[in-house]
Each structure stands twice: as C-alpha cells, then as structure tokens.
Length: 254
Image 1 (spheres, helix red, strand yellow):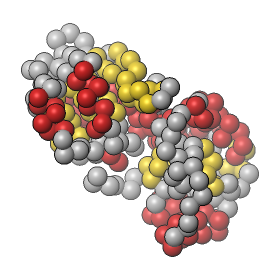
Image 2 (cartoon, one colour; image 1 turned 180 degrees about the horizontal axis):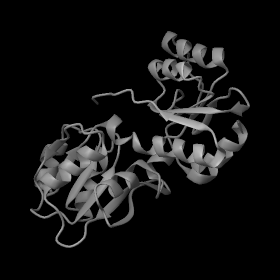
Image 3 (tube, rainbow, N blue to C red; image 1 turned 120 degrees about the horizontal axis):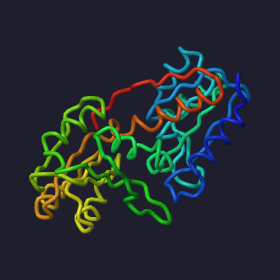
Image 4 (cartoon, rainbow, N blue to C red; image 1 turned 135 degrees about the vertical axis):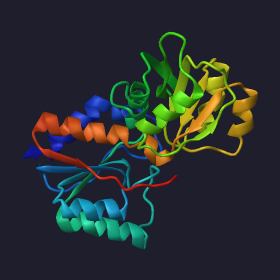
C-alpha cells in the first residue's frame, strides 16, 4: 500500500506539472481512496479504460488525457456521469497529466520516442509559453533514410503504419518530435533546419508545407505517440512505492 497524497506529490515534483500553461488542470482530477495498491495507466480517460481498471481492482487510474478540460466548471453529460459513477463506486482516483507528460526530458512522450528511434542526442523543441513540449533528436554519423526512420517510428509507436510525406533530404541527421496533435510545430521544424518532423495527427496543410519546406513528415497516430510517457510514469510510481501497475491499451486509430 502507498499513500495517494505521496504518489501525487511525487508526480507533481517529477513533472513540474503546475508550471505548464495547459488546456486542462494537471494532477488529481478525481480523489478516491487515500491508500493505493494497484495503479492502472492508459492514454485517455474513457469508459472502457475505467471498466477494465475496475476488473483489475485499480485504486488509481493514471491518464494522459483526463476527464476535465478547460479551467472553469462545465456541465456533466451522460457519458461523463457514467465514467464518474465508475470512479465513485469503487473509490478510485483519477490522476491526469497532459503537456507535462509530453515535455519531460526523460520520461516524456517525445523524449522516449527520440530514444526509441535511435537519436544519440536530444535538445528541447516546441515552445509553448515558458516551456517546451517537444524534442529535437540527432542521429550519429551520416544519419538514416526516411524508410529507416518510418520503420523505427512504427516500432516505437505500437507497430502501426505511419503516414509519411518524404520531401526531405536523402540522409536524415536530425528530427523534431511533438507527439499528439503537434502538426502546428512543423513550421518551427522547417525554420530551424531539421531534416524530419514526427507527430501524431496530420493536418491538411502539412503535405504541401513539408514538401515545400524540404522536410520529411511522419504522422504516427495521436494515440500511438502518447502511449509511452504514461506507461513509463506508471512504472516509475510502481518502482518507487512498491505497488502494482498495469498499462491498459485501448487502441485508437487516430
């Protein structure tokens, strides 16, 4: 058993969560039992995730996309009511971290993708307010080809087939990465001279922008690019506090 308050404090300090100018409140969104023995992590706070967490007797659900968005109270619709009923009925907590779990230099989605695709060096990329949420990665030697980069990205993000626009150089020595809905950062990758850009969701404009900017563009899936950070955070909590942890995959093609 571990104290919920201690787990929350650990996450807050590790992620520097409250320093991010985010679209949602980061941290404990729904309080449950003060004692935690089983953590279930997943990308999005969906009904399916909550139901599967209940089957595992989860005391704490850790999500990247929480239930609460915006900074003011909103109406609770029937879908939200059902999710909350599951949490309240089992006295289960919901802990959610969004941008802090993208931008962390070690366990963030983007840092983990960069490491998984073989970048030997990383630097911050993707300014949002006073923080950065992405990374720039660099390959050793002469770099890699777009086919190699696409294959490595696929392997890092659950082996789904990425969307690729191959308008960049033959050899890729640098790549900018912003997971999820990060297409708006493509222009920054072009202007700062990266050879390739990886994100989750594409936007209509990116095909022409990447080709005209001579940068390879890879969209590996919003969900797929954001499985890494929340899973790793769950593992760290389990290691630190001696509780059990299981990541629940609820695949999403977007």
